[in-house]
Image 1 (cartoon, rainbow, N blue to C red):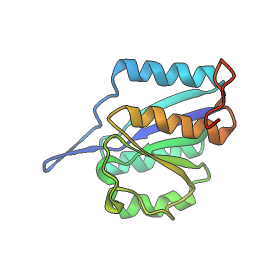
Image 2 (image 1 turned 90 degrees about the horizontal axis):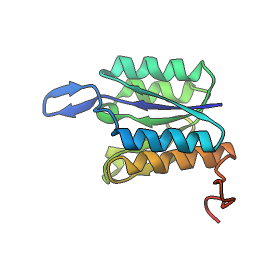
Image 3 (image 1 turned 45 degrees about the vertical axis):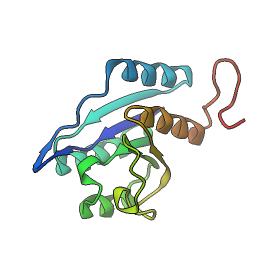
Length: 149
């Protein structure tokens, strides 16, 4: 069982560039939390819309069961919005800022979205991972406390 983390390109003024890597402590935390829950994570940072679409297709045809999708600069991409309903795996939409305006998110009917994680920088990925683990039924912590109880 795997969870894919796919990060779209970032906009920097008029330039589009590959997403900045998540900080090492955050990556370590995500990996350890996934292992504690009996799953793994695979991370892909994309530098273009096409790379993002290809990464989603690859994740959908591999052993992944849930995708954490940060669309980045591609949030308004018509091609992305057309692809999502055709993917079999559900996804959690991730935004590493606190912008909660409707135009800052993918449309609600764009595929099998099981949640949206907004947060402060990398905290949104931690929250999104918990949503995915809860969806998979493996969100129990080592101490036996279930998320949401």
